[in-house]
Amino acid sequence: MDEQDLVIQRFLDHDLTPDERVAFLQSVDADPALRRRWLNLELVIAEAGQLPRIAPSTKFLSQLKSRLAPHPPGLWERVRAAVTASHTLEWNLAGALTAVCLAVLAIGGAVTMIPERIVEVPTTVPQVRTTSFTSAPDPKILVRLVLLRPDAKSVEVAGDFNGWNPAQTKLEPSDEGIWTVTLSLTPGRYEYMFVIDGEQWIADPFAIEETGDGFGAKNAVLDVAI
Image (cartoon, rainbow, N blue to C red; front, top):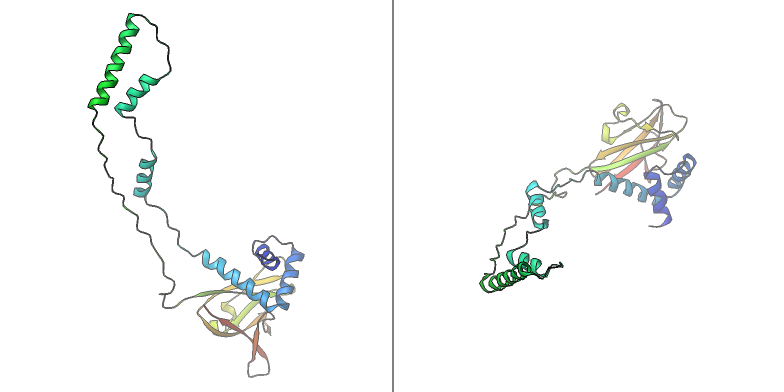
C-alpha cells in the first residue's frame, strides 16, 4: 500500500482531521487518477458489505465437537496405567497377592484381548451456498458523488438517472462542508448537474468529462462500468 492508498484509507475510516479532509478533497479535485482510485475503494467497500454471510450448520458443529472430545481409555490402557503407576507397596502377604493378581490380569488381557473394530463415521459435508454476481439480469453499481460547498444550505443532483428531478436525490452534509450521496446505477453513461440552494445549477468540479447541454452550459458526464 503506497502513501496515496494510505491517505484514501484514512479518509474512508474518518481518521483525518477536518483540515486534512479538505486538503485530501482538493488533491482529488486536481488529480483524476487519485479520484478514480478513491472511487474504486468506495465501490469495493460498498460491495463487500453486501456479500452473504454463511454460518455453519448445527449438525456440522455437533460433529466437529464430537470428534474433538477425548475418548474414554480402553481396558488395556486402564490395566497398563494401574501396573505402571508410581506408587509404594508394603511388602507383606497382602501386597504380594495384589501384585500377583495384577500381573496375571495383565498377562490374560494381553493374550485374550481382541483388537477393537474401527467404525467409520460418515461425515456429511455441509452444502456451501454460492452467489453468482454475473447471472443478475440488471446489475447495479454504487457510485458516490461529492461536492465541497461549505456555504451551501442544501445540495441536490439532477441527471439522466432521476429524470432531471433534483428533488428526488438530495446530498447529505458533513461538518467540513462536504456534501455526498451514493447512487445505485446500472452500467451506462449519465449526464448530471448539482443544484445549490434550489437555484444555482453547476457541473460537478470532480467530473472527469463534461459535455454541452445545448443551451450554452456544461453538464458533467459519469461513465458507469462493471
